[in-house]
View 1 (spheres, helix red, strand yellow):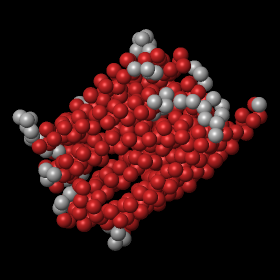
View 2 (cartoon, one colour):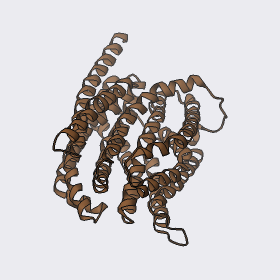
View 3 (cartoon, one colour):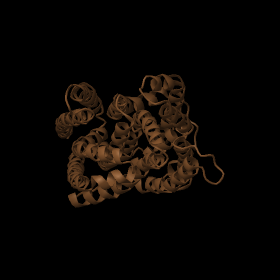
View 4 (cartoon, rainbow, N blue to C red):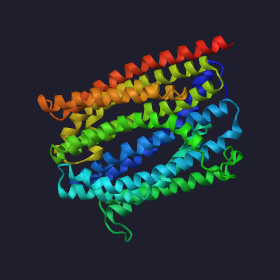
Length: 454
């Protein structure tokens, strides 16, 4: 990554970084997409079981991955400040944090998974599939988080095409193992939806091994010699990572866990409603990969410019990313409105599920419009290492406003299950407004402070 001087150069560099991130995010999400879609071809129980399992796993995965995202602005600012020699130490400490967190989640999961499922009003078969799916997937947690740290290091260098290449390699691996383990091919037992968990775990191991090989053998990563020295544990470095990463992780956790909470509340409805809701959430999450990718790209470019004290350039990048996200979101909204039936048919042939899914997808349109504003703003703020506000706004907008409002609408009006979606849309929109105000304040403060120093 290099300094860009004109707006056209900034747009070009931003797109060079963004497009591979988008392909990578779509690829990573496609694993969950194929898990859900291929499981639905077995039975409604398999679809619901994998949906419940995914809803429980995704908040944990994204929250912990968010903590590890603290590596990105740290490395980006080190490079922007021309402190390349400090990068290996920070990355290795990030790997230590990743392994430690993985072990903790495995231990906690062994105690809390069954009680959580017991408290849900699920059919016995659906609960069994959800549990076995998560147990199978847990075999890949450690390599997944090691890969996440290495990916954040690669992205912080602006080498986002490398992570795109890795992800594209992993997709056929995931789909192939899904086919083998879900449907029982080539002598492999037929596991149904549970097989998607085994396939995903194997894919996570492949991701880690491929990424390790590239970091060790390929330039420009090889020149950093990440594994040349075995660094001792540094709790000071852990503290820096966690001070930045924990608010990021909590913000993402509050955002993604709200969907798990809604899915748990949806368990009061029938299996058709659960399945239709999950399909709509799954596709809305798929569309979210666009503003999320812009958010990640903004963290990289804003962090790079902020590390070099070029705050006016950082601000210009912020506006480029936000404008781009909003424009693309309106195009996606129009497309989803006209093709929502075709979208639903990608997931299921069940007429009842299909009909209800098309109704949920109407609400998904407004949901992704709000996402298009708040996600890139979060990314820009993280580039400035301003992470506490995003955490607070996520807590307030989802858990203080969105969920209570959704619960009231779902249980005390005729909206029923749709009430939860309206609550989330309102909470997300209010959060976007609050984050916009915070970004303006941070940018003014940085430009003013730097001008005073000069």
